[in-house]
Structures are given as C-alpha cells and as structure tokens.
Length: 389
Image (cartoon, rainbow, N blue to C red; front, side, top):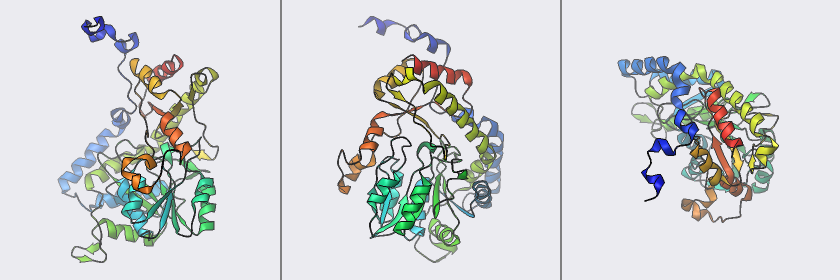
C-alpha cells in the first residue's frame, strides 16, 4: 500500500482546503437565502388553499413575469422542454417543416423539434459567443425553413439583429430559447421579447429557478398564447370539452409560488452575476493566464450577458479541472458532447467534423464557480487557483 493511503485525509489535503471548504460551481442556498422566508410563505399558502393545479397563483406569476419581461403574454408550463415544444406547436410547426438550431446546447432544444414532428437543421456556432452563427443559419435556410431557434447560451444573447434579418428574408419566424438568459439584453432590450415567441426554463439552477421543473412561453401574439394554454391542459378550456388534442404540461401551484417569491430578487441576482463576471474578466483576461492555454471569451458590445454560467476555454481542460479540484475549486462542463455526435441522434446522419466550432467548444469549455451569494474571498480563491495553475 502506498504511504499516501495510510495518511488521514486531513494530512494529504492542500493547505487551502484544510481551512476552506470546497467552492461549488453553484450554491442555491447562498443565492436563495434572502428570499427564503417569502418562498416558504408562498409554499404554505398553496398547501393551505389546496391550489395545486391550474391555481390562481400560477396566473399571478404569469402576470408578474410578463411585466418584468416586458411581454404581453406569458403561459406557465411544467418545464423548459415543454415550453419549447408547445411554442413550436403553437407556431404551427409540424411534419415537413424545418427548424434551424445549434448543435451546441442542451438536448432539450433538439428534442422539442423532433417532438413537434419537424426536421432539425443544425448550424454551427460563433467561436466567441458560443451562440449560433447567423452566417451559418443563412447557409442552412431552405424553402422548408419555418423557424429559426437560437439559444442564448450561458446567458450571452445570440445575434438577434442579424438573425432577424435572415428570418425575414427566409419568411421564417424566430423562437428564442431563453432557458439560460433570464435578464440578458440585446441592444438594451430583454431577450425573450424579440422572436414570435420565447421559451424559458425555471429549472432550479437557472437565474430564476423553481424548486423542481417549471417553464414558460412568452409571446406578443394572443393566438400563440391561446394555443399554448390549450395544449398545456389537454386541449381544453372547460373540464370535459376538449378543443384540440393536447398534453399535460401545466405549471403546478407550488412551483408558481416559489417563482413568484423569487422574482423580486431576479434583477439584483443578475447584477451580482455581472459584477462577479467582471472581476473574473479583469483578473483572468491577462497574458499570464492566456499563456496557460486559458481564454476568457469576450462579450459583444450589444450584449447584456446574464451570466447563467461563467465559462472559459481551456486547451487542456481535464488537466486544468483536476488541478482546480485539488485546491478545492469545483468546475463543470456545459456541454461535453455536441448534439450531432450524441448516440441517440445518429439517425440525423452527421459526423465528426461537420460542425468544427461546436466540436472545439465541447472539448474546451469549462464553467467556473459563479452565483449570487458567492463571497469576494471565495472568488479570490478561484482567481488565485487559476493564476497558479
């Protein structure tokens, strides 16, 4: 047996880990602490009133989120995946239609297109923003293109100006995947208000997160909103009269209560994320860090990044992640396998090399700790650890 195996754990930890706990990539307890009393009051109210399904508090949240977003209609659903799928259905997407999206995102984006019966058409990303390339989208357009589905990845907005021009020329609509971009802006206007519709996820780790799965569709179109309301509730307005064949995709009362309690804190949480990101950018965007094969991606001047995640590039990612772990700094990878190389999508017929920027990003991206409630001393530890690699 090696000598190291006989030593107590405290004797083999780096000195910094002996005095400081591991820094997580995300700490929801730290973030939610200011809102916790309001959250618990909201949950208790739902339980006391027995208002669990299609509850009035869901309508209150929809109205409040719509006011915050600056959008006419918000329809709560039970996940971000459901929001994407039902938005596509409500926009009339079905068999024979094509939807252009990115291969570098969470699988829900692509799943929703296939659920709707449409053909997903992939377009590569820009190297700096990790978002879909408008030039690649333009090359992917065909006569069957019905929707362009950009993802505001990590909280950085896709180039909505150029994408809108491509969509108008193609006679297509835009559905924004805003799952990671609560509070992000493009040219000073909140994302989620540009497309014909937008889909939000309120998964617990999002900038505005529920205590379980939840989502919403936002739109200026009363017709799209009405169709989503029908689809989410078995295609009905009254209990036993079904106008269309629908689904069970409703936002439940407890999640609505959690979201309503958290919403007043969202702007300050986004502000905190931006402040922390600015400190990282200044500290890590220097020559000595770049010489280690680490790159801090720039932010476009038009983009108000919401920093759902703070993501760097590391040419030797596994080595960097291991060294940071050794000194008590957690990291994560979002996402290690682009969608066109996922085993379940072999039937789409893509191969390695088809989308080189997405494939390069999948090998290099590394998320560092960033969350509201993270202390300056914690962030200083992360910065010091990266500089000392």
